[in-house]
Amino acid sequence: MSTPSENSATLTKRLIDSGLRPTAQREVVFKVILEKRDHPTADEIFARVKSQMPTISLATVYNCLETLVQCQLIRQVNLERAPTRYCPNLHQHAHFHDETTGQIHDIDLPIELMAQLHDVLPAGFNASSVELTFRGDAAGTAQPTVPADCAPTLNNPHGTN
Amino acid sequence: MSTPSENSATLTKRLIDSGLRPTAQREVVFKVILEKRDHPTADEIFARVKSQMPTISLATVYNCLETLVQCQLIRQVNLERAPTRYCPNLHQHAHFHDETTGQIHDIDLPIELMAQLHDVLPAGFNASSVELTFRGDAAGTAQPTVPADCAPTLNNPHGTN
DNA sequence: AAAAGAGTTTAGAATTATTCTAAATCCTTG
DNA sequence: CAAGGATTTAGAATAATTCTAAACTCTTTT
Image (cartoon, rainbow over all chains, first blue to last red; front, side):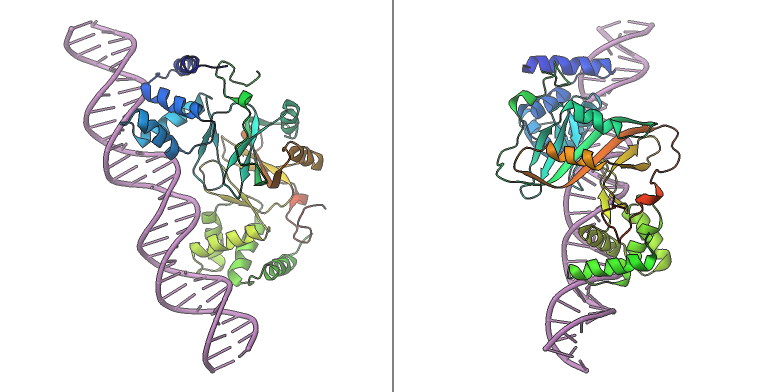
């Protein structure tokens, strides 16, 4: 469970821990991403944020997103040649990119599998992150599939609830 | 094993099978990618190709690359925000992106693991391709690690040799 | 409390990989 | 050989992102 004020507190803490300042812009960008459980682009986030803070600039949205990614409060999703998307789900998960609808679905990954993935690396290869993306068709899945308990609970950033 | 002329023959066959024409430009772009076992960008490929065919245009290189990808003769590698790279290795493999050197290493994937990856998908999700990318540091690996027998042998396009 | 200084935001310009366009060229087939 | 589709080409256009420099906002120092 995570209330907006808990999220805000976590954001503040993370920023200060990194020597950064908790600003209104960073707050609102973060809040907007958590509100909807999808994978918006910077432009979409810009649009959503503007309704709450009409004076914010696109450059600031980009800046805030970079900061949030660095603080590991959101994830970045890179699909081929398309604008970068941002993901509030901090569970270990893969992405399924539906080629027909363009939708992105989160796919939960068992911890064992993650371990096996890392085992595949030869000695000397030290991975700090893994990105797993499927591409194909998701027949009969009209809605994005992010189960409610995958919500990015910031009190529990690694999603072990 | 695959000689240049065998590769060329396979290219021709694939193109014709797809209703496309085997052109000198497609040949040379393909050849140049096979020659070196790395992950060049379109610009790098353009440079290499120009030395053999000085009149070729960048747009054509992009066109050829798209065609080769569609014919599954090469793979496209998407790293975050960086120019698309192209990969002649048709084995099932992951990519390791070394953050310090910028190098990309091919990581062989056991078939069982690939199967397990697909098992992770809920019913209805039909993946036509999977992309697995690690990011981190590859300590003490000065050279790209593409074992010789990972060469994209076109006679054996799925790399089961 | 004023001044200094670091961090942040902002608008707009700049960058750059890629795609688009329209004309020219090349094959293939009737 | 003529017609028609596919392909190539140069250059323009696009669009996501980054850069720049000035303005602003905190925090800390005096």
